[in-house]
Image 1 (cartoon, rainbow, N blue to C red):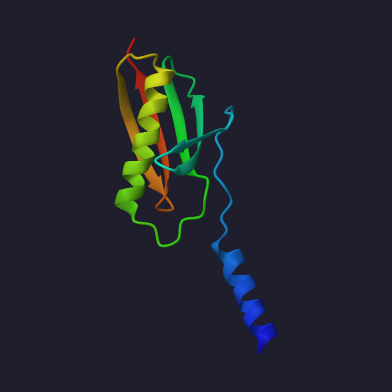
Image 2: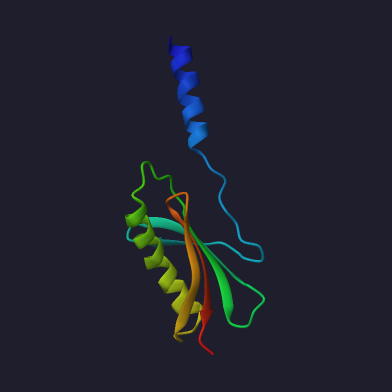
Length: 111
């Protein structure tokens, strides 16, 4: 009984693990916002003043609330868009919440 329980627990733990998304031509920067750890990756798209960004929760989230996670991700993303655009305005071109916790976005800094 104990071996079966441990084997089931191990399978559940492995099933909960996902590979972290990456972004070509980027480096990861870890940041703590609102007591939560995030990994942020930003890379140019090849178009002038346009960037791709990935905000990934660096900790496991059990039963995530997609609305709350999106709000947390945007709290992180805005800081990095402000920094990347050096205080200039920016326009979000598209965004997507992946796995209910991670934000993929593309934005353009005003010229």
